[in-house]
Length: 128
Image (cartoon, rainbow, N blue to C red; front, side):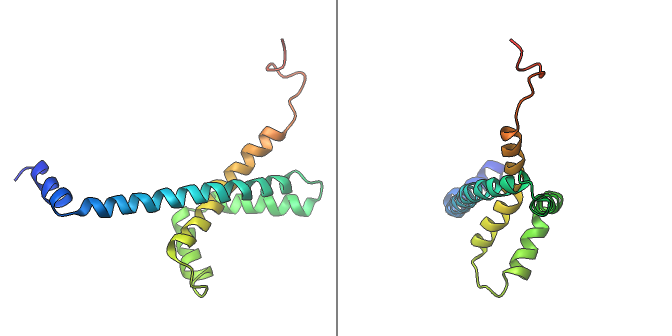
């Protein structure tokens, strides 16, 4: 039996394609929600990073350093089995929270902070 015959038997006739499409839909939902929430959270962290208050800047810097430097899989396990274990949240909800905090908010805050920073008049990009 060739590889294509095995794939046809398992995926097409066996109905496994329905499971794969279901998983794809869950992945798209998690990604879209995490992107939306992470962008909003990133904007909040960006505001904290640009404040004159050193405590707010320090809190935002620690948040970014910890979440950018920690592997996402470790945070998923920590959040699901540790922090949210007693809350009774669904695994998809914990995944959205984790990805919003780790994969999007830290990086978005850096992008927003850079975009908010003024451009120097001596910068080669501003010369005509």
